[in-house]
Image (cartoon, rainbow over all chains, first blue to last red; front, side, top):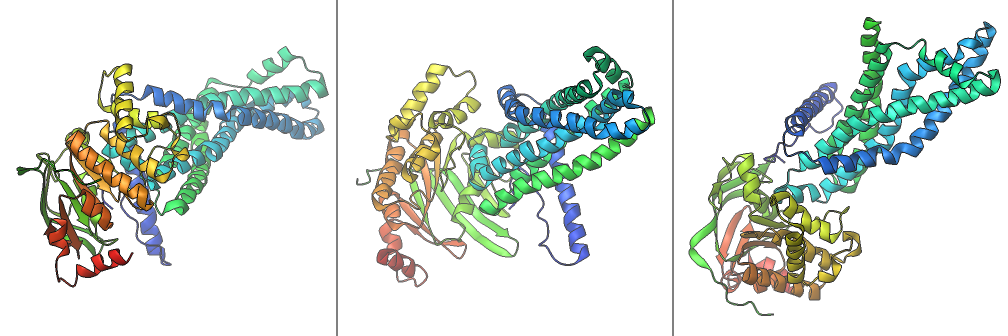
Length: 269
Length: 257
């Protein structure tokens, strides 16, 4: 159905032919592109939804805190434990803090945070907006003079873009603490020495690339979750598909972006 | 409750529709709709499921765009209206959804405050509270103010949905299947509420339904939608007293029901 407030171009019905599938893929890409452009057109124009953005930041960030803390700590601990035998065979176990810091800060922290957020936050956004769509709550907002895109989509995308870099930084710190625990128990390395060795191999580019990755991941998770939910159809089945699609698509895109940003960051090293 | 005499101004059309057509793919839903809604009038649109009744009010509220024809709502041409004008117009139109469409994550109070806070800038907390209490009182559900939508019955949800539209003092009310899925007693209560809204809030309304009791007790005029066009328009009795084979089965089936 065409609405005055731009609904997506309908894709052709799924068929076996490659041509139809390709055509549908391009239609979806076109719709996502329009969705992103619409976000940039509306997100930075007053009135700003500060209160709702803060509420969404709380939902996205604070409510993911426990899971992120546990996962980050375990990742750091296990990664350190599993890396020790390899370094030990070269007699280079003193490099363990440096190896752990490079792996965690450059790759693991933003990636783990993004994957957890895609599962927890992305699915939640997809399901919530999908449910609102099929029960006409989004239409109800629209006919009451509220701009649902600005209120529902812009706030959630901004919230994930703001909170996921913060969570990724926190994950990095917690993962390093996990690594420290393992190193301290096995090698008896002091707290100060460990942190000196952690920061020694890291460069400014590492921090910038890590932060940039987390921002891009956050934006991706938000926009994919919102897109899937906002244009959800087919009742409760559609809500499930929206939640599932939000997770699968966001995770896939996160890995693609990881590869691209690692390549780009490599040029500056 | 018997329907009171409505104060209708037949010289003042708040909605004018001419030659309206709407299709979805190859399926022609509306095929040349012509109708006026007059100031203070309750117009009931009757028709079977899938005949385009809901599509009609979605076009009126700007949720869908017409393929052909003109739709003029409170002086605004819906074909050329800008997004800003549409937002302003929507504040003057109340839309009561078939399944109420209450915001699940908000209490009744927050549901009612939401459109008010977002459309009336600078309104004080006490004004908001008094408006919320006024409309809840009007629909007889003041006690439900702090409940969540999930805690309400179907009839209560309908009433809250109507209250949420009333809080902006709309000039036009659009009811999409207001009695669908409700027991007969609750249906009568909702019909009475629609008439009270017409009397007390001085609204002009379009009521989409296939419930003849609702049509008879709320409508000043009834329009029968069949095959994408209005086949008969008039009072309930005028529409009902016909030998038209396309119209009669609808009424007969309803009475058997």
